[in-house]
Each structure stands twice: as C-alpha cells, then as structure tokens.
Length: 388
Image (tube, rainbow, N blue to C red; front, side):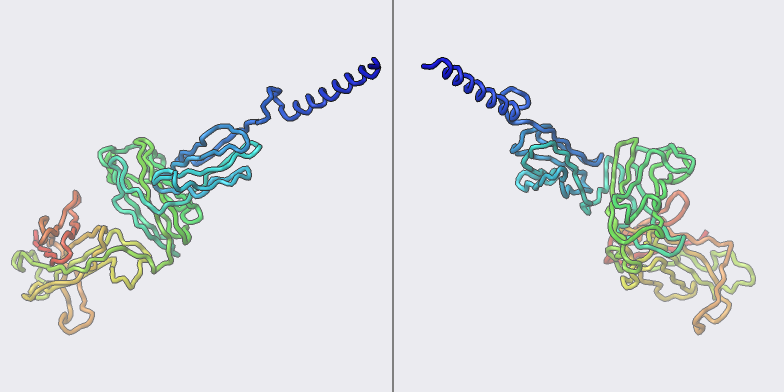
C-alpha cells in the first residue's frame, strides 16, 4: 500500500478521534464521563413554617418532594419558584404536613412556600388560654371604638414592661395586614397592680381595620407559648355574638325598709330597687336583630309584694357584671311613663355570693363586684338582694 495514503488515513482517523473527544468534553463539563449535572434546591418559608426538600441538589428529571409543616393556624397553599410546577401529593400528605412534588429541571431551583389562614384558632398552649377573644368584630367610625381581648397566663406569670406599660415578653401580630394592621393593635397590658401578672389584655382600634379575615397571634416569647384567634371583620351591625341563652332572672329582697338608713325626706313607700346587668364582653357592631343587649336594667318597688322577674338574653362565653342600687321617685310611679328617679345614698345593696339556683351562681371578685354565671339555661336565676 502507498505509504502516503496510509499516512493520510491515519491522520484522518486522528482528527476524527479528536473531534469526538472535544464533543464529549462539551457534553461533560466535569470531564468524568457523566453528562448528568446536579443543580441546587433551596426552600424558603416563614419562621413559623417548617419546610424542606427531599434533596439539596439533583439532576434533571429527578422527582423531588417538598414537605411543609405549618402551625395549626396556617395551611400550605402553594410551593412556587424558578418556573417549577409543584403539585400537592394528597396521598403522602397528612393533617399536620403537606407534601408537594416536582420534576427537577436542568437548572438551580429556589422555591417559596405560600400559606393561608386555616380558620382554626389555638385556644390553649401550656396553660396560656384565651379568656375572651371575639371571633367577629366590625369597623367603627368612633375614636373610642375598641375591641378588647384577654389572655390568662396560667401558672407562668409575666412581669417586665416597656416605657408604655406594655409587657415586653409578648408579641401580637396579624397574619393579614390589610384587615388588621399592626398599628391597630395596642400592646399587652398587665391585669392588676402587682409586679407579676397572671393575665393581660390588648385592644384593636376599630377605626383602623377593614373587612376580611385574619389570624391574631399572641405569643409569650419568654415561655415559648402561642395561642391564636381567627377573626372575621364584618360590616357594622352584622356581628354574630354567638349562642344566646334566653333566661329569666328573679329578684328576691332579703330585707325590708326597716333595715335601711333613710333621711326624713325619703318616703319608704317610694323606694325602688334597680338591678343592672352589664355584658362586659359586648362587641360593638353586634346585629341588633339577634336580641342581645349590652345593658339590661330593671326596677322594682320595694313595697311590691308580687313576683319580681325580668328576661335576660345571655351570650354564652361572655362575662356579666351585676349590681343593685336603691332609688326613690318624686312623681307618680304607677301612672307616669317616665318616673323621676334619684338615688338614695347611705345604703349599700349587695348580692349574695352563692348558688343562684340549679347550678347558676353569683361570683364575687377581689373588688367586691358580682359576676353572673349561668350553668343551667332552662332554670330561673334567682338574685338575692340584701342591705348593709
């Protein structure tokens, strides 16, 4: 064979080998013979949400799962980012965690977990509970319009306050700033005057809120405890106060006019006992058609021997303050539509601190105030009035 021909053939073979080798290097940047290049995977979520991928890097075509464990008051709605289509795996998900899956593309992936409110409230965490937290409130045009929330700390008391008198170990946040913004929430105030407080209250300014829903998060940062309340802001006049118990209150006088200290200008036959019941947890904007009242008041002639009763629409879960006082009238109580009353001082009427019939009771606090507790909605609540 011609030597020149053989040399030319060997040269051609070498060129072809070099060409294929260069092509292989372009397909395999690492030069190790593997064309599959792994790309990084990152997952970002809110501080109170646990989220992680099944791998921190993967090659194109690999199936990746993302596990999301939100707190009770949140739901994992989406996992998005980097053009990736994440689908929820219902079979792999549970009540406490959601699993999303996607196929790894040929580039790095940075994902973000998006959550929505679950509509579920957390009422207790290691002894910390809501005392009162309305599930519905309404905007107000009045500067005095406030909604008050109260928390009990259980056995773990708090003490330290800031320059405004608010507890520094408490954080209160709203998940939807368009509904209840941060500036509408006043900080947590201690209850009582002692150095340590077993509970706290905070208010929401009703002039700064908008229609919609949000979750208020109350966190004891010292004790690492969190409770939440899912709150709906509805139109004023449409707030649903909850379950209303229609009960009857009977008033029993355990004294007579001879037990009173009266001045000469007071006619004993014109003495009137006034009973007032105040719903201290009343929510402004409550539907007037529901039949509940913020204040219920009745007056009874002391000389009247007949039954003394009045109806009370009692909202379950609300606290009712009851007080009694003594009045007299200067015109004709029987015939005038608007009798002229004036309070008779020097005589203190009070309610007995005991069972008010069939499980119902009157409870006194440290200030001597009387609180009504209705445990039996079908019975008549008896309020026994005495004098001292």
